[in-house]
Image (cartoon, rainbow over all chains, first blue to last red):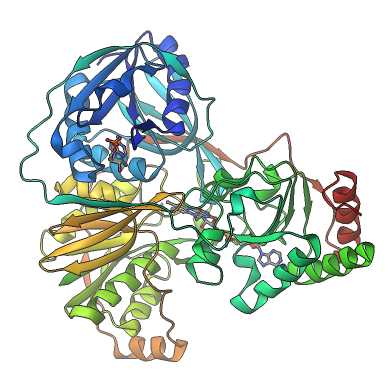
Length: 319
Length: 256
Ligand SMILES: Cc1cc2nc3c(=O)[nH]c(=O)nc-3n(C[C@H](O)[C@H](O)[C@H](O)COP(=O)(O)OP(=O)(O)OC[C@H]3O[C@@H](n4cnc5c(N)ncnc54)[C@H](O)[C@@H]3O)c2cc1C
Ligand SMILES: Nc1ncnc2c1ncn2[C@@H]1O[C@H](COP(=O)(O)O)[C@@H](O)[C@H]1O
């Protein structure tokens, strides 16, 4: 086994993803502890110039027409071959869609252990010790596994690093004939009714709002505050609010002056989209809800009481 | 189209999560379990495909708490077959072990598509669907928000974040992890589920014997203690509202 720390380089439209740079930030300390190098794995088609500026010692560049776009099957096959051949100490993958697709598949293909939802990792001799967020962020698990593991890392777990000048080694792709997946198209975000990323105050509702008819309670408060209503995923999935209102990992990243989270538990995928808000106030009847770990203020009142009370009081001071 | 939908019973996160004596896992004995919400989405997508082009939907679950309820619920919604894999799963089943068990089951089945929930809250060792795809060397796509038949292939819409999607064309058999179905999961009244239970017809077979394959050892589990926990304003709505008004006025968010 080599002592190197591998990082899957994720890139879209010719730009390196922010989470990739976080992985490099995380990899440096691990490489120091294990006595190896930080090695980026750059898969693409004619994209090896993206290696420039990565905070890595070396980049393994695998370029093939089949890797021009993100084709899960092609990425899994290529990465599995690379890992099997080079035998890194750890392979770090961001817990994005790309990561959620590829990490498990590479584990399944290679038999290497996988630790998911990692927020911190250390090396103890031959052992890796990983802290993972499980049960919707309600619990942390500290797990140990043997060297050679694949680790998928939650966004925001390490400060981003960039600005290196790695050496680039070109590696031949494995046999990619016989792929049964074809990339058809990338569809950019539809511009929604409002752009929640530009709003100063968001009244955000989660599953606790209970149903479409109750959205009005949040809308009334938003109207009184001059705010906009946003939501967690289950609310937009159910069609109670448009997709463009969704905050989080697969929705929008917001940074308002005030984020009022109502009936939102604070799953890691939601926190990814709002934890940088200047002021977070959470309303949730469950005092153990993880949202209270990122909120500045919290109330355990029932939102069906608190939202109307707030609306009344805002109206009272505003008139 | 023959679609297989694995169903998993997961811990209901609304509950207080108690830890076992050595603090390495949740105390399963006293928890309530429900069908993983993403499996419910996967089942809906399978039924939408069947509504559109016909075919057969098979649901399969390990014999975990209240699995029968979920299997019969799926039957009541329109699944053609429901299979329970028996064995002792009281200590919990890792994603790798689950994938290996499903791989064993799939050996005896003909199928075009496995639709599975994109994740469950306890996937410490990763998501079962893609591990299964890796073990079987099948094409896969995760975080899907639409899976539609397209001639003899599948058109899969994959959510990339920030409103961006990718469209893939996959020739099955394939494994797709479903984030959300194209429509909200259909509702069946409890009476229909009871009727399905009375009708019976669950197929049962022993789960494939697999070794504990996750390769992870949990040292401890604990509730995260943030040093920056919220300052709590209590449970009284009027009092909390008054404090919130004060806070947002002080911060200049409410400009009156
Ligand atoms: C790939 C992927 C991407 C994802 N992307 C996103 C994303 O972009 N955004 C996102 O939000 N999620 C996302 N999720 C889903 C995420 O994992 C959670 O399922 C989701 O955030 C939970 O939403 P919630 O907090 O509204 O619901 P729940 O977790 O069900 O929480 C509801 C909360 O409401 C509280 N509550 C209930 N009734 C009341 C009441 N009367 N008064 C006060 N409180 C009450 C409950 O105590 C509970 O804490 C993603 C998941 C995956 C797998
Ligand atoms: N490593 C990668 N990770 C994720 N997506 C990728 C990757 N490589 C290429 N793509 C996708 O391929 C398409 C073209 O990317 P690019 O070649 O960087 O312009 C985009 O839609 C990207 O999303």
